[in-house]
Image (tube, rainbow, N blue to C red; front, side):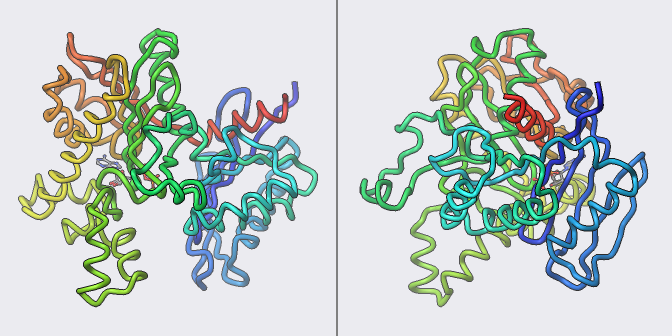
Amino acid sequence: MTKQTILVINCGSSSLKFALIDVATKEESLSGLAQRLGASDASITIKFNGEKQTFSLAASYNHQAALAALIEFLQTNSLTQSIVAIGHRVVHGGEMYHQPTLINDEVMAQLKSLSNLAPLHNPANIQGIEAALAAFADLPQVAVFDTAFHQTMPNKAFLYAVPQQLYKEHSIRKYGFHGTSHYFVSREAATMLDKDIEALSLVTVHLGNGCSLAAIEAGQSVDTSMGFTPLAGVTMGTRCGDIDPGVIFHLTTHCGYTVEQVDTMLNKESGLLGLSGISNDCRTLEDQALEQNNPQAKLALDVFSFTIAKSLAAMTVSLSKLDGIIFTGGIGENSDYVREQIVKQLAVLGVAIDPELNAQAIRGKSLNIATAPSPAVLVVPTNEEWVIANQTHQLIQG
Ligand code: ADP
């Protein structure tokens, strides 16, 4: 059979991540990132055949230019012929999209109408789709939504206790994000545990720059920590997670901040960065806390771990039992320190890990680090690109 690949595109406001994935082998034949799009020092880095090459996008430095540079590279290396479809990560699908969806004019119009629910993310996703539609007019293009997996949450989990008209008229509710990651690692966990996903009750813990948890009963999301936006839930790299909404009224009414300033502060200057005053990067903070004895770095990691442990315990309320906890994302997959700090605070749930196994579970290793009789504690590398490629392929086959 001739080789079939899917081009996966994940567009941020100033970045465009991409990967070319072989549907038969799951292998990434090429991957990369265009960054600082919109600025004059925009560049694109492409990893191919074990080599990384960076090109300047200086002449015209938008999403279209990034895609044009990528296409040129794909053509030069005879990689375009194998592409059968393009899969796009779309952050917000609202209540409209429960499944990956083939993009057409009607879907594009609906995605645009959903942009007000995710003004920081969806417009960038749409820009990426438009650039790809212009460049690959003959290929099917599929939208895979971050929110879709959480559409199975019951209303007691997704409704906020606010006047009902806010939900009915303005779609104010909890949506949840990181759906492709929670979906993927829960299925990987079932394979590792040699159980049917239908028989399992799991909490998945995705800890990257953004962080979220999900309660997964019989394979379906029944609760999650993020909310109407990805700002809610646990402490993150630069996002504050849950705070009393009264803080926002106080800052804007009494402390002289504008709404825009508070928005920026809570999204971009809070979390690990705000607490430590040093960095949003967990590795840097661990180094500062453990090697340099920096109290602010230690405090930031303490708050981080505490909010995650607390959210994890809260997720169990939606489960019939607790078969396993799954750590994933850059921090969840690599930081034995953070995992240990979280698990230490879950003794009441009977969760315990082996320090040696915990130390071994780094750099892409999948491992069960629990000690009997604790529920399983799995470290599972996530692969959102593969989920997007696979779901795109399944849809076009179907
Ligand atoms: P994104 O959400 O942008 O995809 P990632 O999932 O790549 O982010 O996670 C980035 C985070 O993972 C950073 O805080 C980084 O410090 C952390 N991280 C990566 N490797 C390690 C490590 N070995 N130890 C601790 N933290 C790590």
